[in-house]
Image (tube, rainbow, N blue to C red; front, top):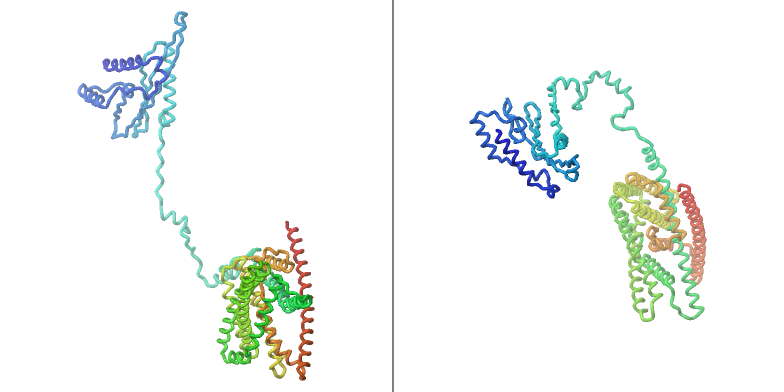
Length: 597
Protein backbone atom coordinates (compact mmCIF):
# COMPACT_ATOMS: atom_id res chain seq x y z
CA UNK A 1 0.00 0.00 0.00
CA UNK A 2 2.88 2.30 0.83
CA UNK A 3 4.42 1.52 -2.51
CA UNK A 4 1.22 2.36 -4.30
CA UNK A 5 0.90 5.60 -2.32
CA UNK A 6 4.45 6.47 -2.91
CA UNK A 7 4.17 5.78 -6.57
CA UNK A 8 1.14 8.01 -6.84
CA UNK A 9 2.90 10.84 -5.03
CA UNK A 10 5.89 10.37 -7.24
CA UNK A 11 3.75 10.77 -10.31
CA UNK A 12 2.37 14.06 -9.03
CA UNK A 13 5.91 15.23 -8.21
CA UNK A 14 7.03 14.47 -11.74
CA UNK A 15 3.96 16.28 -13.09
CA UNK A 16 4.70 19.29 -10.91
CA UNK A 17 8.39 19.20 -11.78
CA UNK A 18 7.83 19.17 -15.50
CA UNK A 19 5.78 22.33 -15.33
CA UNK A 20 7.90 25.44 -15.38
CA UNK A 21 7.06 28.99 -14.54
CA UNK A 22 6.71 29.86 -18.24
CA UNK A 23 3.99 27.21 -18.73
CA UNK A 24 2.03 28.15 -15.63
CA UNK A 25 -0.38 30.35 -17.61
CA UNK A 26 -1.38 27.45 -19.82
CA UNK A 27 -2.25 25.17 -16.89
CA UNK A 28 -5.90 24.19 -16.58
CA UNK A 29 -7.77 21.47 -14.71
CA UNK A 30 -8.46 19.66 -17.97
CA UNK A 31 -4.68 19.44 -18.73
CA UNK A 32 -4.04 17.10 -15.75
CA UNK A 33 -4.02 13.54 -17.06
CA UNK A 34 -5.84 10.72 -15.41
CA UNK A 35 -3.10 8.35 -14.20
CA UNK A 36 -5.43 5.50 -13.54
CA UNK A 37 -6.95 3.54 -16.40
CA UNK A 38 -9.90 1.15 -16.35
CA UNK A 39 -7.65 -1.91 -16.83
CA UNK A 40 -5.47 -0.97 -13.87
CA UNK A 41 -8.54 -0.52 -11.67
CA UNK A 42 -9.84 -3.98 -12.55
CA UNK A 43 -6.44 -5.59 -11.86
CA UNK A 44 -6.27 -3.81 -8.48
CA UNK A 45 -9.70 -5.04 -7.49
CA UNK A 46 -8.77 -8.65 -8.37
CA UNK A 47 -5.50 -8.43 -6.37
CA UNK A 48 -7.37 -6.96 -3.39
CA UNK A 49 -9.81 -9.86 -3.36
CA UNK A 50 -6.93 -12.37 -3.39
CA UNK A 51 -5.12 -10.64 -0.52
CA UNK A 52 -8.31 -10.13 1.46
CA UNK A 53 -7.81 -6.39 1.37
CA UNK A 54 -10.82 -4.42 2.49
CA UNK A 55 -9.92 -1.37 0.46
CA UNK A 56 -8.02 1.84 0.92
CA UNK A 57 -9.16 4.60 3.17
CA UNK A 58 -12.11 6.69 2.16
CA UNK A 59 -9.95 9.53 0.94
CA UNK A 60 -7.82 7.31 -1.33
CA UNK A 61 -10.82 5.39 -2.61
CA UNK A 62 -12.55 8.61 -3.41
CA UNK A 63 -9.42 9.86 -5.16
CA UNK A 64 -9.18 6.75 -7.28
CA UNK A 65 -12.86 7.00 -8.22
CA UNK A 66 -13.76 3.48 -7.05
CA UNK A 67 -17.39 2.91 -6.01
CA UNK A 68 -17.86 2.15 -2.36
CA UNK A 69 -19.89 -0.93 -1.68
CA UNK A 70 -22.60 -0.40 0.91
CA UNK A 71 -24.56 -2.89 2.80
CA UNK A 72 -27.77 -3.02 0.81
CA UNK A 73 -29.27 -4.13 -2.46
CA UNK A 74 -28.14 -2.81 -5.82
CA UNK A 75 -27.78 0.94 -5.29
CA UNK A 76 -27.50 3.38 -8.16
CA UNK A 77 -24.03 4.79 -7.71
CA UNK A 78 -22.56 7.43 -9.94
CA UNK A 79 -19.75 9.88 -9.76
CA UNK A 80 -19.02 13.12 -11.36
CA UNK A 81 -15.42 13.78 -12.11
CA UNK A 82 -13.74 16.40 -14.06
CA UNK A 83 -14.06 19.32 -11.71
CA UNK A 84 -10.51 20.15 -11.04
CA UNK A 85 -8.97 23.45 -10.12
CA UNK A 86 -5.49 24.71 -9.85
CA UNK A 87 -4.61 27.18 -7.17
CA UNK A 88 -1.62 29.33 -7.63
CA UNK A 89 0.02 30.78 -4.56
CA UNK A 90 2.94 33.11 -4.64
CA UNK A 91 4.93 33.18 -1.44
CA UNK A 92 7.54 35.74 -0.71
CA UNK A 93 10.32 34.77 1.70
CA UNK A 94 10.88 36.68 4.91
CA UNK A 95 14.72 36.34 4.71
CA UNK A 96 16.76 39.11 3.17
CA UNK A 97 18.78 36.66 1.04
CA UNK A 98 15.59 35.22 -0.61
CA UNK A 99 13.72 38.55 -1.00
CA UNK A 100 13.73 38.32 -4.82
CA UNK A 101 12.67 34.69 -4.97
CA UNK A 102 9.15 33.38 -5.14
CA UNK A 103 7.85 29.96 -5.27
CA UNK A 104 4.79 28.85 -7.18
CA UNK A 105 2.88 26.01 -5.77
CA UNK A 106 0.28 24.08 -7.75
CA UNK A 107 -2.19 22.24 -5.78
CA UNK A 108 -4.38 19.83 -7.63
CA UNK A 109 -7.80 19.43 -6.22
CA UNK A 110 -9.97 16.63 -7.44
CA UNK A 111 -13.61 16.59 -6.49
CA UNK A 112 -15.36 13.28 -6.51
CA UNK A 113 -18.99 12.85 -5.55
CA UNK A 114 -20.79 9.72 -4.71
CA UNK A 115 -24.51 9.51 -4.61
CA UNK A 116 -26.26 6.54 -3.17
CA UNK A 117 -29.96 6.41 -3.94
CA UNK A 118 -30.63 3.93 -1.17
CA UNK A 119 -30.23 6.43 1.68
CA UNK A 120 -29.96 9.64 -0.28
CA UNK A 121 -26.54 10.57 1.17
CA UNK A 122 -23.64 12.05 -0.78
CA UNK A 123 -20.07 11.22 0.05
CA UNK A 124 -17.46 13.65 -1.17
CA UNK A 125 -13.75 13.28 -0.68
CA UNK A 126 -10.99 15.56 -1.59
CA UNK A 127 -7.50 14.26 -2.22
CA UNK A 128 -4.76 16.83 -2.05
CA UNK A 129 -1.55 15.89 -3.80
CA UNK A 130 1.41 18.11 -4.52
CA UNK A 131 4.55 19.52 -3.17
CA UNK A 132 4.97 22.61 -1.13
CA UNK A 133 8.08 24.70 -0.82
CA UNK A 134 6.48 27.52 1.09
CA UNK A 135 5.33 25.90 4.32
CA UNK A 136 2.14 27.10 5.94
CA UNK A 137 1.13 29.37 3.01
CA UNK A 138 0.82 26.31 0.81
CA UNK A 139 -1.59 24.65 3.20
CA UNK A 140 -3.72 27.78 3.34
CA UNK A 141 -3.91 27.95 -0.44
CA UNK A 142 -4.90 24.26 -0.56
CA UNK A 143 -7.68 24.88 1.95
CA UNK A 144 -8.95 27.85 -0.12
CA UNK A 145 -8.92 25.75 -3.29
CA UNK A 146 -10.84 22.97 -1.51
CA UNK A 147 -13.43 25.47 -0.29
CA UNK A 148 -13.86 26.83 -3.86
CA UNK A 149 -14.30 23.31 -5.17
CA UNK A 150 -16.86 22.64 -2.43
CA UNK A 151 -18.86 25.76 -3.47
CA UNK A 152 -18.75 24.71 -7.12
CA UNK A 153 -19.91 21.24 -6.26
CA UNK A 154 -22.78 22.66 -4.21
CA UNK A 155 -23.80 24.81 -7.16
CA UNK A 156 -23.97 21.80 -9.46
CA UNK A 157 -25.60 19.43 -6.96
CA UNK A 158 -27.48 20.89 -4.04
CA UNK A 159 -27.36 17.54 -2.27
CA UNK A 160 -23.54 17.80 -1.96
CA UNK A 161 -23.78 19.90 1.22
CA UNK A 162 -25.39 17.12 3.11
CA UNK A 163 -28.94 17.95 2.13
CA UNK A 164 -31.27 15.05 1.75
CA UNK A 165 -33.81 15.10 -1.08
CA UNK A 166 -37.25 15.06 0.35
CA UNK A 167 -39.65 12.43 -0.84
CA UNK A 168 -43.05 13.33 -2.06
CA UNK A 169 -45.70 12.20 0.24
CA UNK A 170 -48.07 9.71 -1.31
CA UNK A 171 -51.48 11.08 -2.07
CA UNK A 172 -54.42 9.64 -0.36
CA UNK A 173 -56.37 7.26 -2.60
CA UNK A 174 -59.46 8.84 -4.18
CA UNK A 175 -62.81 7.58 -3.01
CA UNK A 176 -65.03 7.98 -6.08
CA UNK A 177 -68.35 7.53 -4.27
CA UNK A 178 -67.42 10.07 -1.61
CA UNK A 179 -66.23 12.54 -4.28
CA UNK A 180 -69.48 12.21 -6.27
CA UNK A 181 -71.55 12.79 -3.13
CA UNK A 182 -69.65 15.99 -2.39
CA UNK A 183 -69.79 17.18 -6.04
CA UNK A 184 -73.12 15.92 -7.24
CA UNK A 185 -73.37 18.43 -10.17
CA UNK A 186 -69.87 17.86 -11.53
CA UNK A 187 -71.20 16.40 -14.80
CA UNK A 188 -73.78 19.15 -15.34
CA UNK A 189 -76.66 16.98 -14.25
CA UNK A 190 -79.91 18.63 -13.27
CA UNK A 191 -80.71 18.38 -9.61
CA UNK A 192 -83.68 16.43 -8.58
CA UNK A 193 -86.78 18.60 -8.79
CA UNK A 194 -90.15 18.29 -7.24
CA UNK A 195 -92.57 16.86 -9.82
CA UNK A 196 -95.63 18.36 -8.20
CA UNK A 197 -97.77 20.11 -10.89
CA UNK A 198 -99.04 22.72 -8.45
CA UNK A 199 -95.56 23.68 -7.27
CA UNK A 200 -94.32 23.78 -10.88
CA UNK A 201 -97.11 26.19 -11.84
CA UNK A 202 -96.39 28.40 -8.82
CA UNK A 203 -92.71 28.42 -9.71
CA UNK A 204 -93.48 29.49 -13.25
CA UNK A 205 -95.98 32.06 -12.00
CA UNK A 206 -93.67 33.78 -9.53
CA UNK A 207 -90.31 32.95 -11.12
CA UNK A 208 -90.02 36.10 -13.20
CA UNK A 209 -90.67 36.95 -16.83
CA UNK A 210 -92.88 34.43 -18.58
CA UNK A 211 -90.53 34.32 -21.60
CA UNK A 212 -87.30 34.27 -19.63
CA UNK A 213 -86.35 30.82 -20.89
CA UNK A 214 -86.41 31.74 -24.58
CA UNK A 215 -85.39 35.41 -24.78
CA UNK A 216 -82.87 37.54 -22.93
CA UNK A 217 -83.22 41.06 -21.60
CA UNK A 218 -82.12 43.74 -24.09
CA UNK A 219 -79.97 46.80 -23.63
CA UNK A 220 -79.65 50.33 -24.98
CA UNK A 221 -78.03 49.09 -28.18
CA UNK A 222 -81.02 46.88 -28.92
CA UNK A 223 -83.40 49.75 -28.22
CA UNK A 224 -81.49 51.98 -30.62
CA UNK A 225 -81.66 49.30 -33.31
CA UNK A 226 -85.43 49.07 -32.88
CA UNK A 227 -85.84 52.83 -33.14
CA UNK A 228 -83.58 52.93 -36.20
CA UNK A 229 -85.57 50.20 -37.93
CA UNK A 230 -88.96 51.76 -37.17
CA UNK A 231 -88.33 55.51 -37.34
CA UNK A 232 -84.90 56.81 -38.33
CA UNK A 233 -84.10 54.72 -41.41
CA UNK A 234 -87.58 54.98 -43.04
CA UNK A 235 -87.70 58.74 -42.48
CA UNK A 236 -84.21 59.44 -43.84
CA UNK A 237 -84.63 57.01 -46.72
CA UNK A 238 -87.95 58.54 -47.80
CA UNK A 239 -86.48 62.04 -47.50
CA UNK A 240 -83.63 61.00 -49.79
CA UNK A 241 -85.98 59.36 -52.31
CA UNK A 242 -88.23 62.45 -52.45
CA UNK A 243 -85.23 64.73 -53.00
CA UNK A 244 -83.95 62.40 -55.71
CA UNK A 245 -87.40 62.34 -57.33
CA UNK A 246 -87.33 66.13 -57.72
CA UNK A 247 -83.79 65.96 -59.08
CA UNK A 248 -85.07 63.55 -61.76
CA UNK A 249 -88.02 65.85 -62.39
CA UNK A 250 -85.65 68.79 -62.82
CA UNK A 251 -83.64 66.81 -65.37
CA UNK A 252 -86.86 65.80 -67.17
CA UNK A 253 -88.01 69.43 -67.36
CA UNK A 254 -84.56 70.49 -68.57
CA UNK A 255 -84.89 68.07 -71.47
CA UNK A 256 -88.29 69.54 -72.41
CA UNK A 257 -87.44 73.22 -71.84
CA UNK A 258 -83.72 74.00 -71.81
CA UNK A 259 -82.72 71.77 -74.72
CA UNK A 260 -85.35 73.16 -77.18
CA UNK A 261 -84.42 76.71 -76.17
CA UNK A 262 -80.72 76.09 -76.81
CA UNK A 263 -81.43 74.55 -80.20
CA UNK A 264 -83.71 77.43 -81.15
CA UNK A 265 -81.06 80.00 -80.16
CA UNK A 266 -78.38 78.19 -82.17
CA UNK A 267 -80.55 77.99 -85.28
CA UNK A 268 -81.53 81.64 -84.94
CA UNK A 269 -77.86 82.68 -84.67
CA UNK A 270 -76.98 80.72 -87.82
CA UNK A 271 -79.89 82.20 -89.76
CA UNK A 272 -79.06 85.71 -88.59
CA UNK A 273 -75.35 85.57 -89.35
CA UNK A 274 -75.83 83.46 -92.48
CA UNK A 275 -72.54 81.77 -91.71
CA UNK A 276 -72.07 78.22 -90.52
CA UNK A 277 -69.69 77.81 -87.60
CA UNK A 278 -68.53 74.59 -86.06
CA UNK A 279 -70.72 73.99 -83.01
CA UNK A 280 -69.21 73.33 -79.64
CA UNK A 281 -69.52 70.08 -77.64
CA UNK A 282 -72.61 71.23 -75.68
CA UNK A 283 -74.50 72.14 -78.85
CA UNK A 284 -73.62 68.84 -80.53
CA UNK A 285 -74.78 66.95 -77.42
CA UNK A 286 -78.11 68.82 -77.52
CA UNK A 287 -78.51 68.01 -81.20
CA UNK A 288 -77.91 64.34 -80.52
CA UNK A 289 -80.43 64.22 -77.68
CA UNK A 290 -83.02 66.06 -79.75
CA UNK A 291 -82.65 63.60 -82.62
CA UNK A 292 -82.96 60.66 -80.23
CA UNK A 293 -86.08 62.17 -78.63
CA UNK A 294 -87.75 62.97 -81.95
CA UNK A 295 -87.09 59.54 -83.44
CA UNK A 296 -88.21 57.84 -80.23
CA UNK A 297 -91.53 59.69 -80.22
CA UNK A 298 -92.02 58.98 -83.92
CA UNK A 299 -91.34 55.27 -83.35
CA UNK A 300 -93.84 55.06 -80.48
CA UNK A 301 -96.44 56.87 -82.57
CA UNK A 302 -96.46 53.91 -84.95
CA UNK A 303 -97.32 51.47 -82.13
CA UNK A 304 -100.96 50.60 -81.61
CA UNK A 305 -101.52 50.94 -77.87
CA UNK A 306 -105.01 49.39 -78.03
CA UNK A 307 -103.66 46.21 -79.60
CA UNK A 308 -100.99 45.80 -76.90
CA UNK A 309 -103.57 46.60 -74.22
CA UNK A 310 -105.96 43.84 -75.33
CA UNK A 311 -103.14 41.33 -75.71
CA UNK A 312 -101.96 41.97 -72.14
CA UNK A 313 -105.49 42.12 -70.74
CA UNK A 314 -106.25 38.64 -72.09
CA UNK A 315 -103.56 37.16 -69.83
CA UNK A 316 -104.25 35.83 -66.36
CA UNK A 317 -103.07 37.39 -63.13
CA UNK A 318 -100.03 35.13 -62.89
CA UNK A 319 -99.04 36.00 -66.44
CA UNK A 320 -99.45 39.69 -65.71
CA UNK A 321 -97.08 39.31 -62.78
CA UNK A 322 -94.54 37.52 -64.96
CA UNK A 323 -94.83 40.07 -67.77
CA UNK A 324 -94.44 43.02 -65.40
CA UNK A 325 -91.35 41.53 -63.75
CA UNK A 326 -89.74 40.72 -67.09
CA UNK A 327 -90.34 44.27 -68.30
CA UNK A 328 -88.95 45.68 -65.06
CA UNK A 329 -85.79 43.62 -65.46
CA UNK A 330 -85.35 44.87 -69.05
CA UNK A 331 -85.93 48.41 -67.82
CA UNK A 332 -82.94 48.18 -65.47
CA UNK A 333 -80.77 46.67 -68.18
CA UNK A 334 -81.70 49.45 -70.60
CA UNK A 335 -80.94 52.07 -67.94
CA UNK A 336 -77.43 50.75 -67.45
CA UNK A 337 -76.73 50.39 -71.16
CA UNK A 338 -78.30 53.75 -72.03
CA UNK A 339 -76.04 55.53 -69.57
CA UNK A 340 -72.95 54.17 -71.31
CA UNK A 341 -74.33 54.92 -74.78
CA UNK A 342 -75.13 58.55 -73.95
CA UNK A 343 -71.72 59.10 -72.36
CA UNK A 344 -70.06 57.75 -75.51
CA UNK A 345 -72.24 60.07 -77.64
CA UNK A 346 -71.17 63.09 -75.58
CA UNK A 347 -67.54 62.05 -75.90
CA UNK A 348 -67.87 61.84 -79.68
CA UNK A 349 -69.47 65.30 -79.71
CA UNK A 350 -66.52 66.70 -77.75
CA UNK A 351 -64.06 65.04 -80.12
CA UNK A 352 -65.86 66.42 -83.18
CA UNK A 353 -65.88 69.96 -81.79
CA UNK A 354 -62.16 70.02 -80.97
CA UNK A 355 -60.64 67.94 -83.78
CA UNK A 356 -58.41 69.29 -86.51
CA UNK A 357 -59.49 69.77 -90.09
CA UNK A 358 -57.82 66.54 -91.22
CA UNK A 359 -59.78 64.39 -88.73
CA UNK A 360 -63.19 65.97 -89.22
CA UNK A 361 -64.45 63.16 -91.44
CA UNK A 362 -63.42 60.44 -89.02
CA UNK A 363 -64.89 62.25 -85.99
CA UNK A 364 -68.10 63.00 -87.87
CA UNK A 365 -68.56 59.35 -88.87
CA UNK A 366 -67.95 58.24 -85.30
CA UNK A 367 -70.44 60.78 -83.99
CA UNK A 368 -73.09 59.59 -86.46
CA UNK A 369 -72.45 55.93 -85.56
CA UNK A 370 -72.78 56.66 -81.83
CA UNK A 371 -75.96 58.62 -82.56
CA UNK A 372 -77.50 55.65 -84.40
CA UNK A 373 -76.63 53.34 -81.51
CA UNK A 374 -78.22 55.82 -79.07
CA UNK A 375 -81.39 56.01 -81.16
CA UNK A 376 -81.76 52.21 -81.25
CA UNK A 377 -81.03 51.84 -77.51
CA UNK A 378 -83.50 54.49 -76.40
CA UNK A 379 -86.24 53.42 -78.79
CA UNK A 380 -86.05 49.93 -77.28
CA UNK A 381 -86.04 51.40 -73.78
CA UNK A 382 -89.05 53.57 -74.62
CA UNK A 383 -90.96 50.53 -75.89
CA UNK A 384 -90.16 48.63 -72.67
CA UNK A 385 -91.48 51.52 -70.55
CA UNK A 386 -94.59 51.82 -72.69
CA UNK A 387 -95.35 48.11 -72.34
CA UNK A 388 -94.82 48.35 -68.59
CA UNK A 389 -97.22 51.32 -68.40
CA UNK A 390 -99.84 49.42 -70.42
CA UNK A 391 -99.51 46.44 -68.04
CA UNK A 392 -100.04 48.67 -65.00
CA UNK A 393 -103.00 50.33 -66.70
CA UNK A 394 -104.52 46.91 -67.39
CA UNK A 395 -104.22 45.95 -63.73
CA UNK A 396 -105.78 49.24 -62.58
CA UNK A 397 -108.75 49.06 -64.92
CA UNK A 398 -109.43 45.37 -64.26
CA UNK A 399 -112.18 44.50 -61.75
CA UNK A 400 -110.70 41.25 -60.38
CA UNK A 401 -108.19 42.81 -57.94
CA UNK A 402 -105.37 42.19 -60.40
CA UNK A 403 -103.65 45.42 -59.31
CA UNK A 404 -103.50 44.36 -55.67
CA UNK A 405 -102.19 40.93 -56.60
CA UNK A 406 -99.56 42.48 -58.87
CA UNK A 407 -98.39 44.96 -56.26
CA UNK A 408 -98.22 42.39 -53.46
CA UNK A 409 -96.38 39.77 -55.51
CA UNK A 410 -93.98 42.17 -57.20
CA UNK A 411 -93.08 44.18 -54.12
CA UNK A 412 -92.59 41.25 -51.80
CA UNK A 413 -90.47 39.54 -54.44
CA UNK A 414 -88.35 42.70 -54.40
CA UNK A 415 -88.03 42.49 -50.61
CA UNK A 416 -86.99 38.86 -50.80
CA UNK A 417 -84.39 39.50 -53.49
CA UNK A 418 -82.71 42.39 -51.65
CA UNK A 419 -83.18 42.16 -47.88
CA UNK A 420 -81.42 38.86 -47.19
CA UNK A 421 -78.27 39.71 -49.11
CA UNK A 422 -75.01 41.07 -47.81
CA UNK A 423 -74.91 44.69 -48.99
CA UNK A 424 -72.10 47.19 -48.59
CA UNK A 425 -72.56 50.90 -48.14
CA UNK A 426 -71.70 51.64 -51.78
CA UNK A 427 -74.17 49.04 -53.03
CA UNK A 428 -76.85 50.50 -50.78
CA UNK A 429 -76.12 53.91 -52.29
CA UNK A 430 -76.74 52.55 -55.80
CA UNK A 431 -79.84 50.70 -54.63
CA UNK A 432 -81.37 53.93 -53.31
CA UNK A 433 -80.74 55.60 -56.66
CA UNK A 434 -82.48 52.72 -58.45
CA UNK A 435 -85.47 53.20 -56.16
CA UNK A 436 -85.53 56.92 -56.99
CA UNK A 437 -85.60 56.22 -60.71
CA UNK A 438 -88.26 53.55 -60.21
CA UNK A 439 -90.40 56.04 -58.30
CA UNK A 440 -90.15 58.49 -61.20
CA UNK A 441 -91.02 55.78 -63.73
CA UNK A 442 -94.10 54.82 -61.72
CA UNK A 443 -95.18 58.47 -61.81
CA UNK A 444 -94.82 58.44 -65.59
CA UNK A 445 -96.88 55.23 -65.74
CA UNK A 446 -99.67 56.79 -63.68
CA UNK A 447 -99.63 59.80 -66.00
CA UNK A 448 -100.08 57.39 -68.89
CA UNK A 449 -103.04 55.76 -67.09
CA UNK A 450 -104.56 59.20 -66.50
CA UNK A 451 -104.25 60.07 -70.19
CA UNK A 452 -105.83 56.77 -71.20
CA UNK A 453 -108.75 57.37 -68.84
CA UNK A 454 -109.25 60.85 -70.27
CA UNK A 455 -109.39 59.45 -73.77
CA UNK A 456 -111.38 56.24 -73.31
CA UNK A 457 -113.11 56.11 -69.92
CA UNK A 458 -116.85 56.53 -69.59
CA UNK A 459 -118.74 57.58 -66.52
CA UNK A 460 -117.21 58.70 -63.21
CA UNK A 461 -113.63 57.40 -63.26
CA UNK A 462 -111.58 60.04 -61.45
CA UNK A 463 -112.34 58.81 -57.93
CA UNK A 464 -111.41 55.26 -58.84
CA UNK A 465 -108.19 56.50 -60.46
CA UNK A 466 -107.21 58.47 -57.35
CA UNK A 467 -107.77 55.46 -55.11
CA UNK A 468 -105.74 53.16 -57.34
CA UNK A 469 -102.95 55.68 -57.80
CA UNK A 470 -102.80 56.26 -54.04
CA UNK A 471 -102.66 52.52 -53.46
CA UNK A 472 -99.75 52.17 -55.90
CA UNK A 473 -97.81 55.02 -54.27
CA UNK A 474 -98.56 53.82 -50.75
CA UNK A 475 -97.36 50.28 -51.54
CA UNK A 476 -94.21 51.65 -53.16
CA UNK A 477 -93.39 53.85 -50.16
CA UNK A 478 -94.13 51.03 -47.71
CA UNK A 479 -92.02 48.49 -49.57
CA UNK A 480 -89.08 50.89 -49.86
CA UNK A 481 -89.26 51.65 -46.13
CA UNK A 482 -89.37 47.97 -45.16
CA UNK A 483 -86.60 47.05 -47.58
CA UNK A 484 -84.15 49.72 -46.48
CA UNK A 485 -84.96 49.34 -42.78
CA UNK A 486 -84.05 45.67 -42.74
CA UNK A 487 -81.15 46.13 -45.12
CA UNK A 488 -79.69 48.61 -42.65
CA UNK A 489 -80.49 46.30 -39.73
CA UNK A 490 -78.98 43.13 -41.20
CA UNK A 491 -75.90 44.88 -42.57
CA UNK A 492 -75.39 47.08 -39.48
CA UNK A 493 -75.59 50.32 -41.45
CA UNK A 494 -76.45 53.36 -39.35
CA UNK A 495 -79.14 55.86 -40.41
CA UNK A 496 -76.50 58.54 -40.79
CA UNK A 497 -75.48 56.82 -44.03
CA UNK A 498 -78.69 58.04 -45.68
CA UNK A 499 -77.88 61.56 -44.52
CA UNK A 500 -74.49 61.24 -46.19
CA UNK A 501 -76.20 60.08 -49.40
CA UNK A 502 -78.47 63.12 -49.26
CA UNK A 503 -75.47 65.38 -48.74
CA UNK A 504 -73.81 63.93 -51.86
CA UNK A 505 -77.03 64.51 -53.80
CA UNK A 506 -77.18 68.13 -52.61
CA UNK A 507 -73.58 68.69 -53.68
CA UNK A 508 -74.52 67.26 -57.07
CA UNK A 509 -77.35 69.80 -57.32
CA UNK A 510 -74.97 72.64 -56.44
CA UNK A 511 -72.23 71.29 -58.75
CA UNK A 512 -69.83 71.32 -55.81
CA UNK A 513 -67.80 68.28 -56.94
CA UNK A 514 -67.40 68.37 -60.72
CA UNK A 515 -64.39 66.02 -60.60
CA UNK A 516 -65.87 63.28 -58.41
CA UNK A 517 -68.90 62.00 -60.35
CA UNK A 518 -68.86 58.40 -59.15
CA UNK A 519 -71.52 58.94 -56.48
CA UNK A 520 -73.83 61.05 -58.61
CA UNK A 521 -77.42 60.17 -59.40
CA UNK A 522 -77.46 59.11 -63.05
CA UNK A 523 -80.83 59.58 -64.71
CA UNK A 524 -81.50 59.75 -68.45
CA UNK A 525 -84.99 61.19 -69.10
CA UNK A 526 -85.08 60.42 -72.84
CA UNK A 527 -87.13 57.20 -72.63
CA UNK A 528 -89.69 58.53 -70.07
CA UNK A 529 -90.01 61.74 -72.13
CA UNK A 530 -90.77 59.71 -75.25
CA UNK A 531 -93.52 57.80 -73.38
CA UNK A 532 -95.06 60.97 -71.86
CA UNK A 533 -95.09 62.84 -75.17
CA UNK A 534 -96.56 59.78 -76.88
CA UNK A 535 -99.47 59.49 -74.44
CA UNK A 536 -100.15 63.24 -74.13
CA UNK A 537 -100.27 63.92 -77.87
CA UNK A 538 -103.74 62.33 -78.31
CA UNK A 539 -105.00 64.32 -75.32
CA UNK A 540 -103.91 67.59 -76.94
CA UNK A 541 -105.43 66.44 -80.20
CA UNK A 542 -108.86 66.29 -78.56
CA UNK A 543 -108.53 69.94 -77.53
CA UNK A 544 -108.03 71.19 -81.07
CA UNK A 545 -111.18 72.71 -82.59
CA UNK A 546 -112.48 71.57 -85.94
CA UNK A 547 -111.76 73.89 -88.85
CA UNK A 548 -109.36 74.63 -91.64
CA UNK A 549 -105.79 73.31 -91.55
CA UNK A 550 -104.26 76.74 -90.93
CA UNK A 551 -106.60 77.24 -87.98
CA UNK A 552 -105.55 73.90 -86.55
CA UNK A 553 -101.85 74.80 -86.98
CA UNK A 554 -102.50 78.01 -85.06
CA UNK A 555 -104.07 76.13 -82.16
CA UNK A 556 -101.25 73.58 -82.17
CA UNK A 557 -98.66 76.37 -81.91
CA UNK A 558 -100.70 78.13 -79.23
CA UNK A 559 -100.99 75.03 -77.07
CA UNK A 560 -97.34 74.22 -77.59
CA UNK A 561 -96.23 77.70 -76.50
CA UNK A 562 -98.51 77.63 -73.45
CA UNK A 563 -97.28 74.19 -72.50
CA UNK A 564 -93.66 75.27 -72.91
CA UNK A 565 -94.12 78.34 -70.72
CA UNK A 566 -95.86 76.30 -68.04
CA UNK A 567 -93.05 73.75 -68.08
CA UNK A 568 -90.43 76.50 -68.04
CA UNK A 569 -92.03 78.16 -65.01
CA UNK A 570 -92.27 74.80 -63.31
CA UNK A 571 -88.62 74.14 -64.14
CA UNK A 572 -87.54 77.47 -62.65
CA UNK A 573 -89.48 76.85 -59.45
CA UNK A 574 -88.20 73.30 -59.02
CA UNK A 575 -84.61 74.30 -59.79
CA UNK A 576 -84.57 77.28 -57.41
CA UNK A 577 -86.22 75.38 -54.57
CA UNK A 578 -83.81 72.49 -55.01
CA UNK A 579 -80.79 74.78 -54.95
CA UNK A 580 -82.00 76.62 -51.84
CA UNK A 581 -82.74 73.41 -49.97
CA UNK A 582 -79.47 71.83 -51.09
CA UNK A 583 -77.48 74.84 -49.91
CA UNK A 584 -79.31 74.85 -46.58
CA UNK A 585 -78.73 71.14 -46.00
CA UNK A 586 -75.03 71.25 -46.92
CA UNK A 587 -74.47 74.13 -44.47
CA UNK A 588 -76.43 72.25 -41.80
CA UNK A 589 -74.27 69.15 -42.23
CA UNK A 590 -71.14 71.30 -42.11
CA UNK A 591 -72.21 72.91 -38.84
CA UNK A 592 -72.99 69.53 -37.30
CA UNK A 593 -69.61 68.17 -38.32
CA UNK A 594 -67.87 71.19 -36.80
CA UNK A 595 -69.89 70.77 -33.61
CA UNK A 596 -68.97 67.08 -33.38
CA UNK A 597 -65.30 67.81 -34.05
